[in-house]
Length: 301
Image 1 (cartoon, one colour):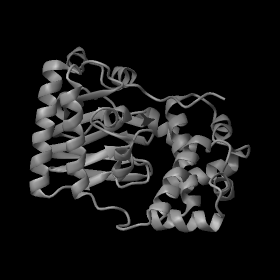
Image 2 (cartoon, helix red, strand yellow):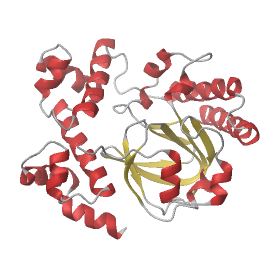
Image 3 (cartoon, one colour):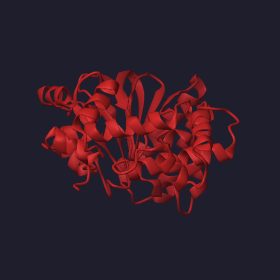
Image 4 (tube, helix red, strand yellow):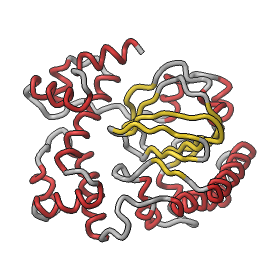
């Protein structure tokens, strides 16, 4: 089977925001870290960005205007002083009509490891999980500190690229900790075991969605009962495992419909369905249109 395309930064900017000017703003290893002002990037977006994904985390912080983005199966509207995250591996899309100012940053997990970080940080930041809440509304004080950190990180990046990681990494971690202080967990005080089960379940779904669509399959991989898995996932995300599985199937299909010319029957097979009609009904249930209508909409945008 062909793998769904995952954009690196060069491929993404070349397709959706081609600009020599933008290229001069991006420095060093773009698959590790980058930061720029939103207005310096978005004005080069000439077309709507269809369902896509990246192996890096992304965050958008606004100082003026507003922005809309679809992350996973949910639509989000961002305003001044708020921050929005797209976790690594998550499907996202947005149009080219927003007018705003602020900061855009992308970073690999490696930026939270090493000398100034550790693997525990990845577990603490729920907003970097595909099942977490990506939209964080900051209070005035926290928003002011976050703005100062973005300004400092941008200055360092524009002056020295990635040469001074001993400066960039601590400031990035401090920024995420500030955001974390204003983040409201999906379920405050949730049992660590339920969080771990849910996180691992979502990872397994992303890895096996083409071949495994049954809750019992994932429960077996986690060595727990289906009822225990259902209870844990519902507790943390307020959604049943079956809905997570269905939504992941639809998101995978949307990426294929956007990025390939596969016939609908092949898209169905790629996401694990021999029965095209069943796949079409599932897709329409979540998107309100058939796969054919969705592809037509993408081509017209």
